Image 1 (tube, rainbow over the protein chains, first blue to last red):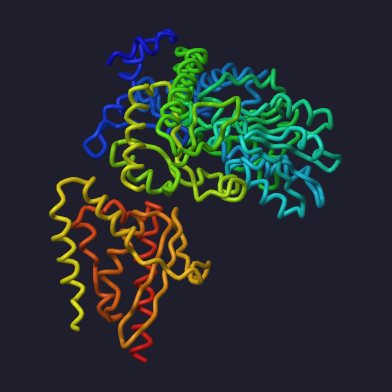
Image 2 (image 1 turned 30 degrees about the vertical axis):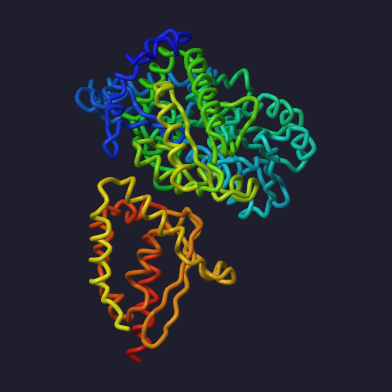
Length: 416
Length: 144
């Protein structure tokens, strides 16, 4: 594979990198797997897979409370992962890093605790028209419960947020703003620092859904000054079932616990319970210890590759994919923001996305079709029956995009 | 004119598909069938006739005529439409009793099993359930 020439800007060997991902050897319908569904979940390097295996083979034990050596080792590894996450997003303290299942759980936690405490009747919550259901439904539920109003920052035809409109929307009734950092459907990278600055002028806290940001760009919570931020392990080369909620320490201190149970307590008696300190106050029950440690391995992987390489390579793939599709003609692009991550949402004119996806699947190409968990955006805002989404990761290649383009041409031949 | 039995029609379809060597030809045939399926009257493309649980839109209408159940359906995805055309060829104009008994083995035999998975949001599984439900309902009415 003569990929080195085309990828001469990155400082690593792409072929060697692909060898770190065993699943890339799989065949689908007799064809080599071309995995372009990375926004749904991305594949795991052996270092992450091995860290899970290694955990269960050598140090598996319940954390925090044990006095025996194995428990100490597990605790050290688990807390070591927490410190890796803190450093990864540049949080000020490990007290601000809560491990939970994923971004969805993080948003639910904030809506149920901070939201419930601070949002009252006729108050307002601002999200955007492009939110993933996970950063949409919990707020909708909260508003319905409290008889509060849910407002949406509009999205323009290119898939960018209308910041001027946002400035007009925010008022003294606004209690929280929650927006997506990078859109999973459109690929848009939102100007979140600007949004946070505007909100803070009005003393309104901001939550960021960074699930799609983590695999593509460096997150710096102190620079951004966001009040809450969430991301999921499985979107950033880590396992499923683990994610992170970051929140400023003073907010977490003031918030009531989300779930009750073991680990989040200091002491329990028949008539009262004293809750544990941060971050444990929000980590009820035995955590996903292996998952957290593997997330730590995923972070090590990303740091080894570097966001600079990720950016160079993924921008190249994005540009190439756009060019290939444009050359084919008869392609409608959804999400053409100036600032984008490596996500291409499109439709072959006159062909239902489901039909396109079925044929591409027969060719071994894994893409996603439908609303991408952003039904209001795709169906109501863009009035489409769905889109076909190809999303790229660090191990994808231009040769794969060539095959994908051939597949799209085949789709045109078969249906039109 | 004698109507063929469900089994006979299924066998016919399996034979037709056995002429195709590869998935590409099978899909091309299904696409042809989809393009040829008569469109459902626009007035039936409403929420009332829509099958829930699909990525593509699927509408189904069923009515009894002389003891036989007649199905009419449509979809905005062509592959789904082609598969619907096959289902209608097999099940339409048959008695509710016969419809409710059939296992629709032909779908597996022609290599379209992956479209049967309940995870596949293509409406096919939902559609089959709806068609069965109509058959069961009309069968119960007949018994009474």
